[in-house]
Length: 169
Image 1 (cartoon, rainbow, N blue to C red):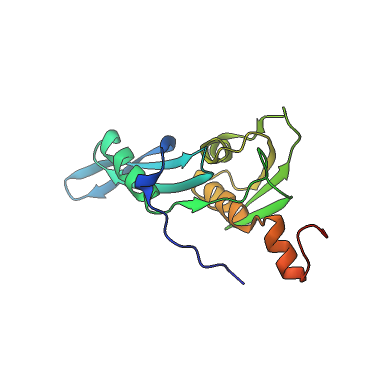
Image 2: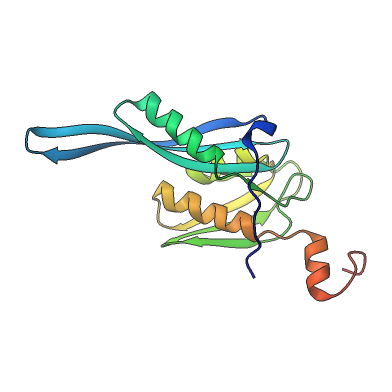
């Protein structure tokens, strides 16, 4: 039942990037240790409800961030929202990471921590309650969050699945 996502063009959005984590990585070689950096980046256009994530690795931090942004622009996803929040409760899973997203009333704000908060603000979700369960690894938490966001359905999709009109629900 997975829906086929068409590729979104990054040039048509006003994307803002946010660095979630920067990790210093060393590779032990014959001559000593080779130092490099891995960056995890989230990009999104809050007005269009579009968000993506990517990671980049390089010898210097700015280059790693740049590579992460380029990677994130290739993985953009459109999200189904109701005004300023998510339409229904959803649980996203990736590895041992679980992320629960719950709709929240107007004025609640983004109740989320770390990696989940970066995705929510980049996606333009203004009122949401979240809970990250299991791992604290930012890579797995972000992938679980994206799994949850991809599972969101709007009223029309649910109505067609049930064979009813949107007004009947």
